Image (cartoon, one colour):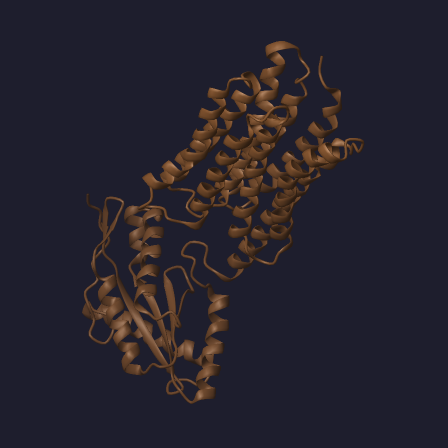
Length: 435
């Protein structure tokens, strides 16, 4: 005997989960995998209740799986929203939440008359998250971590106060658990997605509505016993949450595509298109204020030999390391861009001078001349730098770029002729491997 009335809900959730999986597969969001697992748990929740009318132990097991899966989904949604999800303590917290929910729901399902079991499960649910937070306090001390702790301490206190109440005590306890779980999801999503987008607003509000179901439904049953809304009304927030999450993934994909249109995918630096816009803006500001701006073109010497000697993977790592070196040497108001395969461009804005630009160039050459350790390989590269200063060397962005480019190639040719680069060149060490 099965409950065929659950079939439409199961079908709707299955379709939403499939749609979510299709979007999540192409998503750049690190949380999408946890979200997808959560929606699989929601589908399991509906599938289990399909068999809840079975008599005896089989029906109890179906009810337990259905209720536990609903709680597991909430725990996954909460953990997906924390920015420290890769910390080991996050996995411990997830394990504690899943185990505490499972234990309490199991006691309510199989031994609801055992007050010792209920009290023990309620205490564990209340203090286990606090124990994890205190044990890992040095590594993680975040508002969301304490949100979980406070929420579960309050939930455990409520359970101890009301779960043994005659008549509706177990129902109050179960609804309190699910209210705590999905109110926690609401708080986590509000904190993680504090932006005015449709996806963030819809998902946060839908989680709040989902949590409210576990307050409104029992209240209506107590005070309006003749009013029986369709079960789909109570399931509506679930569907809205799924739609909101899909919107969030699409919004993040759009933002990622916009970022890729203006940034280099390997290093994350501005690409040639964004660099050109920033150069135009920098020269316009310098022209308005009567100040100077400097353009540095940096070409990594013998980078092709790095690829040929130790492979393109190590070459990519060299480019990433070089980008970090550049970013660490300039101010936040300056711009570092990757404008070619092994070519980088740097815009130094006010206050700057030719002497400042030359000092930056010399320091970059010195830093890039140091051996780099890359996955067991020791790679040594040099660099040639060309500098042009606005407005002394050129009056327009294109002319400034040409001037810097010519000077960079002059230094490169001087380097090949004399074994050096820049105004007082340094030797270039060939790429080599080592352990």
